[in-house]
Image (cartoon, rainbow, N blue to C red):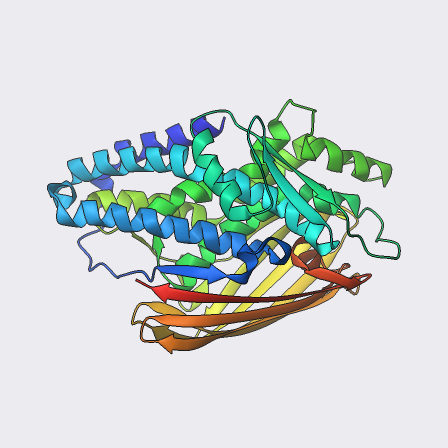
Length: 413
């Protein structure tokens, strides 16, 4: 099914090049690309954010190569060669490059929930090697590209004293699918705050449809959905694998960023501009729709922002619609300034609160290190009652509070 979705997208691309030509020629804008050293690449300090950044920077390599071929050869000269190039490169990137990173990101979602419990995660490719590093695990994924590969995560040691909240077993099992959805949000933020690229449709499709395909899987061996639906049933929540699959599909089809990415491919074919622009009405971003599995049940999250230029105000609203009704809201302030003339960066603080009295606070600050480099410092504190905290809280110092501190050095190229 995952390949069918990719094939459907390719059919649309080849069927509509003429309509895309009506978009007109527009000036291309350079997207900021970085390469980073991140504390999260050290196994005991791993965070979902570090994995998302690693995957995103891998995408930067691909988009840079795509642009070099398109801009420096005859391929970018007319809509026919651009059609062939975009179909060929998209297919190659989807099958080869993103398979390993998609699986690595999914498994690392399980792993960071082990880290939150002060345990040590190990990531193992079926029929392959075992890793504690997300980098070596992702790199081995290239050996599995184009094959029906799978992987699994195990935890050892650690643990915190005290009793976990009811249904906490769901958090670890759902961590993989949730991390996929959060990487899709990372790509949406890339489009909104920086500049997206048409090649990023490949990882977006992978990440956004993870829950949809997982819910449709007929395998019951080591299946995350089987595990979490069993726990939900024990809590009295009548949630099935079909409900999980449907939730993932709705999130994919109802998210305006899905269509922004797909239209970006049409736009490139017609104009040669590979950039993806954020869907907006005036200064408001059209709300993206995410889908998550939580210990309280299934939820949708709407995310939007109001942009005044150098300052944005991101907000979100999440609702557990099947299971135990829970509402979580967040509000933040993000200041941006260009570094290296291409990448928007700056500072951000965002708070979370929900109807279960779950709380959370996340903050980040970038510091210019040179004309084309910067340091990034981030920190967060969440309670386990927070929906966002379930997915991203750092090491539990005591039940149910988790703290995370992260740092990164990035060079812009």
